[in-house]
Amino acid sequence: MSTLSSVRDFARASTPSVTFGHAVALLAGVVVVGIEHVMTRVELARSRRQLAELDDRLLRDIGLDRATARREADKGFWS
Image (cartoon, one colour):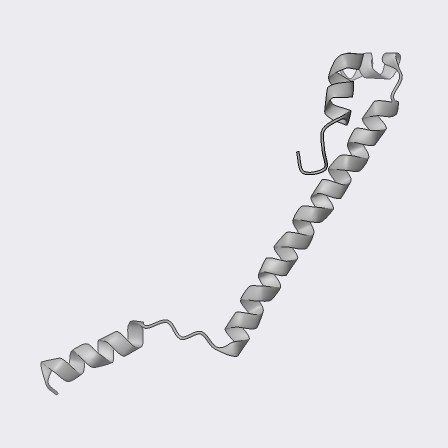
């Protein structure tokens, strides 16, 4: 076998081949990560709404004052 054919064989072997199945799996992974991120944000928004509803006694119990709780509760969905 010549050196040139060895180089060609090496180049072909190291070229990543992307099949339809690999592309679908990659896309599915991206979709799952995106959904997980949105669900995390939904849960955070829910927690912030609940924080805004706590009275001063409960805020003191968790070590927050009303202003800090209000600042946290006023953050946007993607913050």
